[in-house]
Length: 146
Image (cartoon, rainbow, N blue to C red):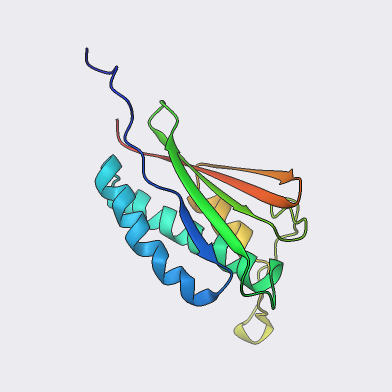
């Protein structure tokens, strides 16, 4: 019967806490695109949000600990959305509770930091954070075509 077949699944992506491992992200996202027929604009949003979230965990959560791991899972939710889940074992940090940086009035006043959550809020359909025993979970939802 149509609609009763199991959803395709993409294996979990596991990265080490090194910025160089972010190179593994694009092939994984391309696999998602092929598996779930993700539109180009949604694919761009997913890639952007994942790069932001993962690079922040590596740079700020793990700091000088290059042998830690991060995982990313993707599952369809049955409502034409993909749910991407990033998990780490870094110290507690709720990105949704972090203050956003104010917009500078000039380029000279522009300071790094605080803009990533704004990016996530703009490009993800929804965001959720949960503290885990010994880690963090960030969940992002993205609408895909029916």
